[in-house]
Image 1 (cartoon, rainbow, N blue to C red):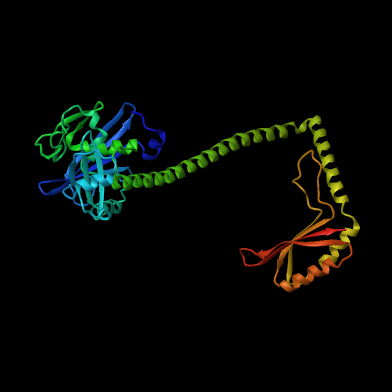
Image 2 (cartoon, one colour; image 1 turned 30 degrees about the vertical axis):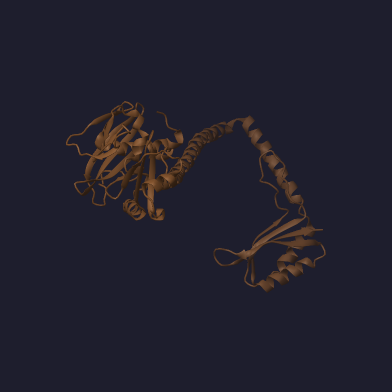
Length: 398
């Protein structure tokens, strides 16, 4: 039996089925842990104990739990009909019932239907008990209805649970009360399962297949719980995957950085050793000459008129304004070796802080009045982390 990969991703490889049942007027539970391995489904752990509203700590609460309620709080009836309409079957089995107060599940056989019902308050209380233990229920079934998932795989004419016997002979009564002193093992698709854990196993199988031929309000509620569990697992596991990817990228960056850093060190050592060579000295001199020409070209663009304008702007700065940066003809891109220096001509950028908005406004107006200035653009004005008013302006010359 092959399950979709998305199911394996969200549900994992281990699953727990729990059946609540009543035996000698005492509520008990059977717990079954199934693990999916290469050879198929394997029973890893099982138990049958009294229920005191708490699941033993030996069970991993992070795993998906499928819940079977088969206690004396669940009423089951047989109806001699396999009517498609749930409402008609419910009316035959439980007429004049307020279904807003009950959950129900219907298992249709060949000629009969088994209907299991329980009060919503009872089921919700069980789910809340699990929630308090941080156990997320991923599916629910009522009574013996979960046996529909394995009914065709069991060859025996009678199937025993913890407190019942289910007959395949539909002309007889299907469900009867029966308690065995010893356990019976059934072969379910080549997997040996004891009758005491058969319902729990059936629930796990429904959880993995994420489908059932049964119908009813509890099936809809079970689908909702299954979707909620998958959404939570998708978020948790998706977050872990993203963190793993980020860490992987950082690791690769570190490996590449280390590799190229070593190469850079080796190259530096080679350059230092070859400095004594006249050819290397000539190349170094040539590079120096080229860089000097670039610097001269950049400096040459700053004429005396621009210097006077900058002096005039600086002289008019109020005492409440502190400049942190003034750039004439700023670079359009970073300077790279063997590439021409590209600047934005006729532009001055100024950054700083001000203590007075009025002084700042007046200073801008005075700058705009200067004849050699085309326009003044305020590119930034606001508070920084130190609660100081920062500003940036761009001055375009004529």
